[in-house]
Length: 141
Image (cartoon, rainbow, N blue to C red; front, side, top):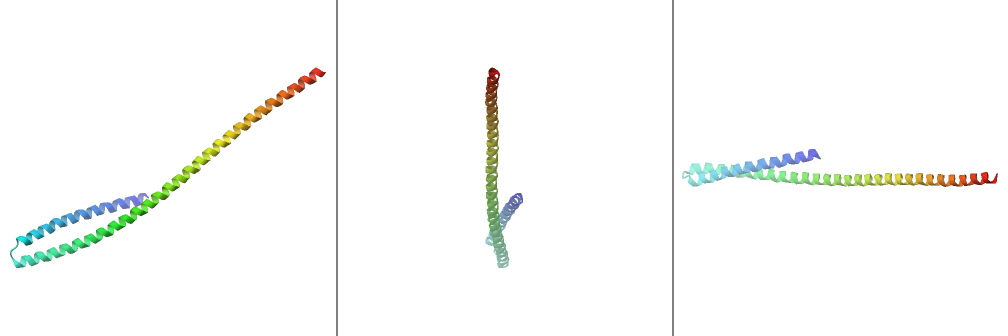
């Protein structure tokens, strides 16, 4: 799961880097548009239009890459979410088993203590009966 999280963080970092490149491209785009508007020469206009066209093509390609990256991030997030759910469910099961085992152990200890008390009571009672019988034998002799 740690590997998935680190991969997700790397992808987010890449997405931020691409967003920064897009911002820089937008600055370039505005500079090109400004240059086209200020240019009076036909040759410069055509050259600027070609540069603008290349810029738009590059911008479209980066947008496609960003969309693909966003899809990959969503898939990775869903995968991590499902792994977290599985881990949480496993943890709950382990906790239930631990609690059940602890309760069974406490029940066993309580039953052993009851047996010990019952055995002691039975032994005392048997000793009392025997001493009563011994007293009767001594008295009859």
